[in-house]
Image (cartoon, rainbow, N blue to C red; front, top):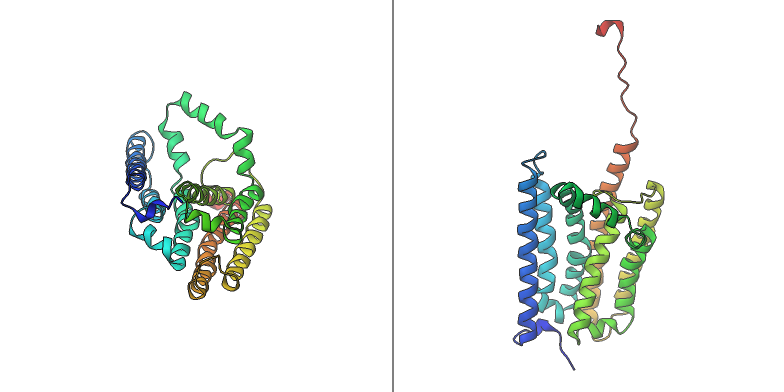
Length: 267
């Protein structure tokens, strides 16, 4: 049986931690350089977007390597906090950092146009559809915690890596399907996205209650109850932030415009 890398000490775990660390450093440096270089041509890239990117990437990497990841391997409460960081808070922060907008304004015009064409292809449009993104995100969690997949991810390195990758990507895609911070090829109405967001939040809450009563195999009852509460209340907190941003965007695009009417007194 192949144990997950978080036990550490073997060549595979060292290699994985090295690759993830290099990837983390690369995306931090790359984003910073793109922001600084593009600011010489366009208006300065906002500081809060830098901070969102740094915080979002950090939320993701601590769940995959290091002492937090090792603790999550044996403690369901830590595992569930990691789920919130990797699948919800981290993606939200990275979406708010608008990485695609930064990339598009940093590339030469010809490359930016090619990237725009790529972003409009049918596959990306399909997975960015709000319903599909919600199925990948929330449906994936139901599959993880109600099948033997949760046990396998703690026994096999490949499964563990794939599950973490799926949670991070699905969380990011689901967030961009609701919040249009970056350019997106196919836009859906606010009402449509709001309905999807409510249903997805309800399914997330139902799963946490299910885990409270039916812990995954091998998880002690006390840890399952505490982990389910983290999932329920922590998930609600992140979802409230998303809903608040969503409503602000909705209000900003639909508020009545102030009429620019000049009267005789203005002359």
